[in-house]
Amino acid sequence: PYYMLSNHKFFLSNTREDCCKKFYEWDYYSCVGTTPALTHGEFYPEWSSTTSTCLNDGNIPTYMLNDQRWYLSTTLRQCCERHFYFNINACLGTSYGGTDKWYVQYEAMTCVQDCVGVSPCGGVANDWDELFSSKEKCCEEKMFYDNKCRFRTA
Image 1 (tube, rainbow, N blue to C red):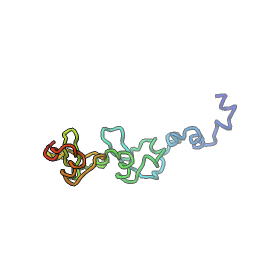
Image 2: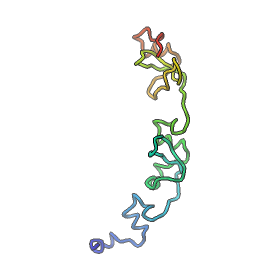
Image 3: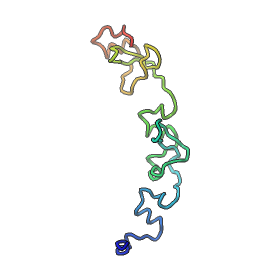
Image 4: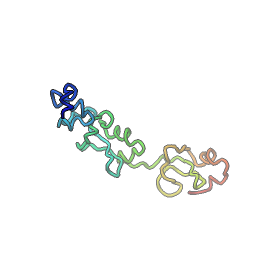
């Protein structure tokens, strides 16, 4: 186009690499037709599946290659901690059964154990749940207004 010729010093480059760097930095490697060296690891977050996980299968999306510092990690744990901190155990492929400590479950008006299974387990506690060493201590601290807390089951 004429507008490029009229300002050729801006629009024209001596090499493909220069042109790609100037106008297509957001997709540089596709523009030049190469794959960059992996400088920050090979684990990347996989957001397109239904699971929250990181992969190292060599199929890193191009946009992640352009910002390796943010997207890529050298270990599975690093990748999971950065991108799936809210569900790290699922990302790591491990199950977490809880601490066996106690936390309040207001819906049941009692304290339950941080574990998976039948009562007194109430499921795995959330990060924001305060944990106690015993049901009695939990009831004292969190349900002090209800003297039947210790005797209820969820």
